[in-house]
Amino acid sequence: MLLSAQLDQQDGSPRTALYISTESQLQTTRLNQILESHPKLADLPPNQKPTLARIQSTRIHDLEAQEHILQYQVPVAIKRFNVGIIIVDSIAANYRAEFEKGGKPAHSLAKRSAQVAQLGTHLRDLARSHNIAVVVANQVADRFESQSMLAPLSQQQTQTPRAASPSQTSTATVAAGNITVPLMQHEALLSTSYPLALDHQQRFFTGWGDDPMPHLNATMKTPSLGLTWTNQLATRIALIRSPIYEDRAYHPGEDKVVAGWKRTMKIVFSAWSNEGETGYGIWQGGVRGLDDGSTDAT
Image (cartoon, rainbow, N blue to C red; front, side, top):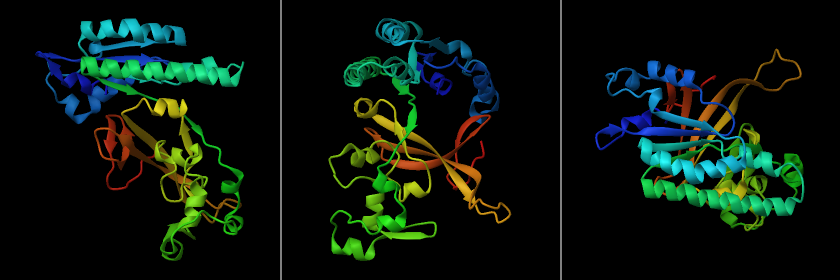
């Protein structure tokens, strides 16, 4: 993104990119590798080729510096350097470091939610007023399910699921591996039966949990900063890496062995694009689509 954004021009001059990091320094060696290996970028004439000189970067160590830079320095940099894209990587690091130190949990959560909402409003204002893209990376954490969802399948089949139409209970099934369960059973595995509960709704806006039988295929994840941050976004794209298992009889005591990984990029929700999912791989030239369903071992 930092390189491709420079292909856009405004008033005859290429746009620049602004990279704000809260975790580690910008990997310039990786950017040079992409410049040399990407088929489109490598073939451009020197006067049209993106350069590292048009990438402004800074590293933020705490929330106080983050607020000052985003509120006062970034608007000046956008005008001065003709910025076309802002990337923040990642948005959650400083919040987690600041608010997970201890103290009163309820008070900390309320204060953090207010700050996150203010940050989202500010970033949207920057994008709208300057006609630029703002891309924010976010961390994810493992999602812990309720005991009923973690119970063995044989025990779950004896539980009473939520009400459904007769046609659903008699004909609709979901298959995963060697297990086939009724649709109502599948819904009971995904979430609590109470439709207004966060556990039930989060599978529709997190990117994890809306696939058939996810518990049998991949670990469930929850994006950091919760529903407060979700409400600030115009688009969420989930990058999911799922294991591909291979049965190997010569591994005693192991039913399945990870033979590879499948990377998928999913539009969870968007104000300007339809929902969709596609495979992708990471290579020396950047990121490329794998629409044929092939896997990527990286």
